[in-house]
Every structure is written in C-alpha cells, then in structure tokens.
Image 1 (cartoon, helix red, strand yellow):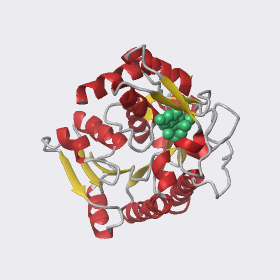
Image 2: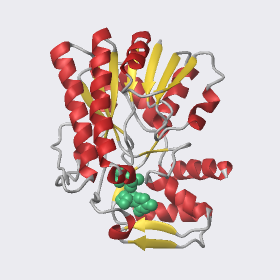
Image 3: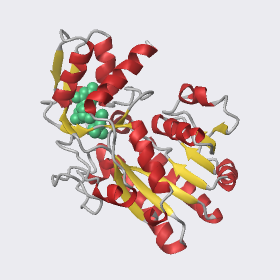
Length: 321
Ligand code: UDP
C-alpha cells in the first residue's frame, strides 16, 4: 500500500512513517518543516520505499500529485503545542482550517481514504471525566486564544464527517490525547520533554500552577498502533475515536517521577500561569480518555504505563545530549 502522511516529519508523523515502512508499505511525506524536522526522518531516508517532499498542503499541485499516488492519506499537518498556539493564533487557525479543507477536497476528487489527526483539546474544559467521543465540547471564550486550537480542529472534524456524509469520502477521525516519546521536542510547550530537558540540565523542573492538574500520557508507538488498527477497519469510517492511555497522573507527580529518575536532589519549582504563558491562557484540570470505543472495535490497548514512558523519554533524551 502507498500512504501519504502530511506532517510526516513531525513527531507523530515520523513514527507513523517508520511503522508503515517496517511492515513493508510505501510512504510519502509532505511536510513544510514548520514544526517538523528533517532529523526526525533522517533514519528513514535510506529506505527505497520512503519518499519525502519539503512543501506545504497549500501547494495545490504538489498535494494533488501526492494524493493521486496514495491509497490512504494521513492528515497530520497542523499547528500544535499550546505555546505555539497562543503565540501564533493566526497561523494556527489558518493552517488547521484551510490546510484540512485542501487535503479533504483533493482526496475527495480521487476518492482516497483520509485519516484525520484531531485532538483531545476539542473536549475543552469539560468536567465529566473520562471524555467520551460523543460528549459536548466545553470551550472557553474567544478572547482566550488557547481555544482557537480546539475550535479549529473541531471545524476539521465537522468537515471530515461532512465529506463522508455528503460525498461518501471515507474519513476516520482520531482524537489524540497527550502523546509522548522519542523525538518529541519541548520547544512547543509539551510538558514531558520539557521536564526531562530541565532535569538533564540540572533543574529546576518547572511545574505550572499548583501542579494538581492531571493528564494521561501515551507512548507514541501505542498511539500509532491505534491509528493503524482504525485505518484497517472499514467500520471505523465516518466515526471519531479517542486514542491515548487512560492512566491519569498529576503534573506535580510527573515532575517527581522525572526528578527521581534523573537525580533525586533536583529542585521542583512552581510557576504561576501568568508567568508561564502569554495572555490568553487557560489550563484544564483533568483530561482522561474513555477508550471503550476503540477497544471494542479494534482491540486497542496501550502497552506502556507512565513509569516505562518516563524511563524511555529520559533514556532517549540523555542519549541525544
Ligand atoms: N506544564 C508544566 N510545565 C511545563 C509545561 C507544561 O507544568 O513546562 C503543564 C501545563 O500547564 C499543563 C500540563 O503541563 O497543565 C500539560 O501541558 P502540555 O502543554 O504538555 O499539554 P496540554 O496542556 O495540551 O495537555
């Protein structure tokens, strides 16, 4: 099979490419390297079944040619990371909405299946935990730019579902919860690589707010496994699925785990949100996925828990230094 991955030089995209190549498929990557990086795909370049184009989904001719050659399109190209979203809201909204519009339109002309990467952000600050796919979205006001990310990805989801309903374009939507692993950078705000970087530099580890907010972290290879299972399942078409891990941990406990793993004498500091983020930030207290739907349809179960995840990320980031 031939797969196109938009955003394939990004963190999740490069792991997806690696998994497809490992099972013998052909992979094309389209990435503008805005947050992705060539170093993510360097090890893949020697594989004759791997091809990449440095370019944008906004280049319609390039996109049309790549879509034409593919059997399935994974659309991962998007603005991600809370820090980036708050700092560059215009870029976020335009990339996420217009980029997805173009990919779906192009795929629709050729009737190529599209797997759209969405995000747990679309649940917003809903307080009914765990989050189920058919739960309401609870977003903050438009004056808080964080919510532009959730709103833009929600529009993407509406559009992908509309293409299926109206034009019978097969689409599958995956809502990725906090995903971590080798090659993820802390540059766009993601907490685990930031904690590990800080710890390896000798600390302090900076916990934002009171640290009692919680998340669930899934290792990227588990997430890729979920994406591939759903892609191969015809009954997944026209539906939305959570993918992640449902083991919940507070950010404060995560900081302690990183500290204990790297050096128990490291300091942990608490940084007020007003200092940590530009204006327009609002945090979520808890975010936990309900994984019943994906488990029942394709038997997905994350294999790595938070201790193993912290070990791997520390090991990977130490090796890179
Ligand atoms: N966070 C933190 N220190 C950091 C970066 C993030 O305490 O250096 C917190 C952040 O405020 C949030 C949690 O960690 O409560 C997860 O943040 P991230 O940006 O990784 O993901 P998201 O907020 O999208 O879940």
